[in-house]
Every structure is written in structure tokens, then in C-alpha cells.
Image (cartoon, rainbow, N blue to C red):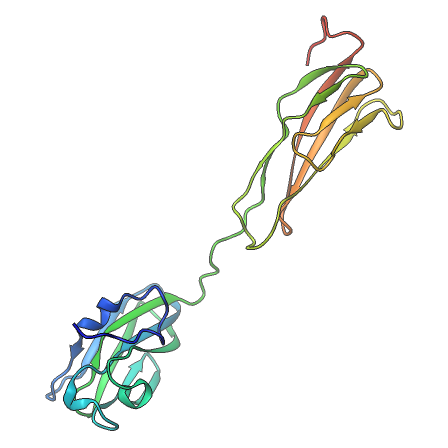
Length: 229
């Protein structure tokens, strides 16, 4: 086993990738991959290392790599990273149904340890709006507090965002101050109604980009006996 310096490649790449290789002897044809893909733009990552003692020196192994219409010329792994070290080359290309990669001889035989293909136009995870539940319709006694049962779930996107939630009254007796929240930004805020009547409360939650709402009705009665949601 040979220790491989992995400092120049992404952390998720296993060292075992560099324990074997594909190489191409001198006679034609050149080493050629034809990878089936959906038409689009791709990032192609090519992985190399120089492990063979007789080619550990400047200019002892030099070759070209063609990825579709782009050419990486005169790749000399030893000159870039030395012996027993990982090297990654990256190129972005447009491809039809087949992505072509060709290694062409220069000095000695071209060799490669791995190929990674990533859809470059992939937008990544799509942010979805929070899922808001204001709870079930309920009843309350006039001038007595009840606890609201709001809940919010989210996909955690965009990264680093924090959910912001807020209760408000959107329907009910038109009497200023008749509804008082102890903490309107808390999902389980307590609320007090000074006047009887049917109220609609709305819970809103935002992830910084997208916002969602849900409502709950509260029937406020002078007495709870016979009071229904």
C-alpha cells in the first residue's frame, strides 16, 4: 500500500480510487470513453496520480485529454503534484446523448484513476414553502386564555435561514384590543378574547424566501356549556 496525498481533491473522494488505474499502450486506437447522458451541460472531474517509479519525473509521462470539444493539453501529473499525490482536473462541457472523453498519447502511456460527471445545470435542492398547521378549530371562554396549537415544518432551505412565525386576527368582532396574544411570534402562544364571537386567527411562517399560512377558528362564548367550534 502506498500513501497518497489527497489534499488536492475533494474530501469525499476515497484514497482507494488511486490504488488502480486505466492506462493505454502505444498501438491505436486511443483510450476512449463514451458515457451515455441526457443532453445538457456537465462538469467533468478527472482524477490522476503518478505511482509508477519510472515515470516519476518531469516530462516522463505527458498526455492530452479531450472532453467533448475541450482539450486539456500536456498533462504532466508529476510536475504538478509530484509522486504519490492525487490530482483533479475539471472541465465544463455541453454534451448530447453521449459524453466523449479521449486520452491521447504524448510521452509514455496516458493513465487515469477515475472520472466523475456532474450535471452542471442542476439547480440543486429546490426550496419549498414551510408547511403550516394552525391547529383544530376550538372554543374559548370570554376573558379566559387558551393555548394555541400551531406547528410548522420546513425543508431547511435556504441554508442558514431561520423560520419566522406570527399569529394575527383576520376576522372577528370589530372591537380594537379584543384579542391579546401573550407572544404572537410563538407557535403555542396563549391568547385572550375580551369579547364573545367567532374569530379567525391566521398563523404565517416564512423561511426568508417563501411564506405559507393556515387559519383556525375560535368560537368565544360567555360560558363553555353548549359552546361549539
